[in-house]
Image 1 (tube, one colour):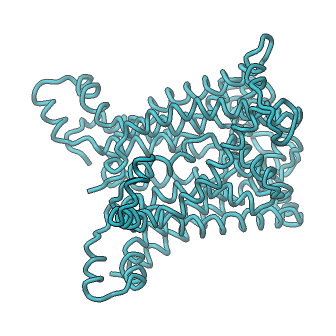
Image 2 (tube, helix red, strand yellow):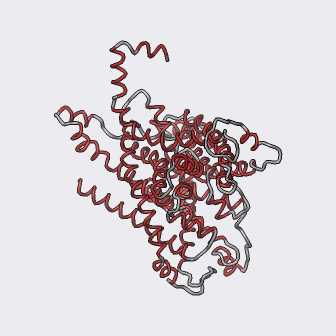
Image 3 (cartoon, rainbow over the protein chains, first blue to last red):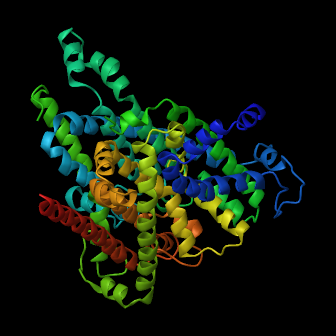
Amino acid sequence: MSDASHRLDEPSRLLALLRSIASPGVLNAVPPLLLFLTGFLGPLVLVGLTSFIPARTFGFHGDWTLENYSQLFAEGSSHYIPFLWSFGLAAACVAFLLMICYPIAYGMAKVFGKWASPITLLLVLPLFVSENVRLFGWVIFLMKGGGIFAGIMKTLFGLDPGSMLYTPAVVLFGLCYVYLPFMLFPIVLGVSMIPKDLVESANDLGASRFQMFREIEVPLAMPGLLVGGLLTFILAVGAISETTILGGQNISVVALDIRHEFTYNQNWPGGSAIAMLVTVLTGVLVMTLLNRLNLDRLLGKR
Amino acid sequence: MNKDTKPWVRSLLLAWTIAIVVFMYIPMISVFLASINAPRYFRFPIKKFGMNWYDDTFAASVTGDIHLTSLYVAAVVALVATVLGFFGALAFARFNWRGRSIYQKIILLPIFFPQAVLGLALLQWYTFLGIIPSWETAAFAHMVWIVPIVTLVISIQVFSFDASMEEAAYDLGATRFQVLREVTIPALAPGLFSGALFAFLLSWGNFPLSAFTSGADSTVPEWLYSKMTVAYTPMASAIGSLSVGGSLVILFGAWFMLIFWRRRQA
């Protein structure tokens, strides 16, 4: 740093610096970056600082402590349970959605031709209906006794499927349902990046269908798979409606745990420590994976 | 259709896709069925149909309040996010500048962050700054998440934008403002339009951010959540169906506007 400031004394370098600051790229980047600073970085720094003040206190008085973090890992602490639920369910959701979405994405990018746009439209539409409405729809469909599924089963086959709500499985089902479009569309982008002649030449050289899939399609579609997987994972980690509407009171997830600390326990530092753990865990994951991506290529730069 | 794909593979892919599409719409149909069920408790098959829950919904004053709040939030978010996203996308895709690859990643971070945790962090931020949460703070919270998405949507358009058109206009003596108004904005209009549409609808349906940042004001998804988890009333299914209908009207309205606009251009 000292070296740089020393060199800035020369007028030509100062001019060059000014010019690079006033370049159109930098100027256009300023408004969204201001929003980023005041709406994202600022709050996170505040949460970070709050996590180091004594539990159940407010304001900064210079008495920093690590107690909030040691409390989380203390003997008898139950804070690890919501963590395991959130991250476990999110991982399972990503795994299922990869298997569900890959065939559809492949079809939309390579097979369906002119039918791809109406299918895209039909799959985008649900995204614009609040997730609460859609999850509530599943409650009506699946609920015990008078639910639509139970009603159909009873009238057609005389069967009673019993209760299907309020289990971890139905929460996972809800997560997969709500976040399906977020997995699908990045994969479509990824799959459409596979050059056709490459697959053809592999076929000509005698590769089996599975070899083509494993050694050509998946590596080339990887950016799309990564973005889709990452997006779904992060959204699922922060999900609350799925657990409260479909899961009842049986499962606690990490966002509800933080809210519980903030509101019922009036323990902002304790809640902040949990929020910081989530931030660090997801942040490391996002930074590692985003660094491997070429965004220009994925978004179709020519 | 791709001729190299075997017919049975194609049928299988299509069948799977159609199954998933149908599956996506089951909840919307369920909510609609619940809203036209006359008794208070829903049982399928429906014995008595009725529009009484819609009558109650239109009579209740809360219906207007929550829709107005949601509308204010979504309109402000759509407007601001499109302007910020426009600048953001130019920096993202149009210009080559030194910090660009870092900027591209930084600006996307709010999308890759758990929304509920962001909402709670913003709540703490507002308290720290002494701002009392209301629909305005909820709109700000939405922007933090939606502006990056709009930036991406517009960027896709910017990547296919031919920058030499701008240079030609400059060479012909146009001012910076004229170039912006007569060349850049018209060329990017479809991207700006879909960006605004995305912003409006994503804000309209958002729950995890509003839940912690809207204070005493309540948006439609928040009201629905409280009715579904604490005090159930079949009005929730009526309002849910109305909001599905509203989204459809906006989307198809936008689609027709786009077609009309393209016709006029051609």
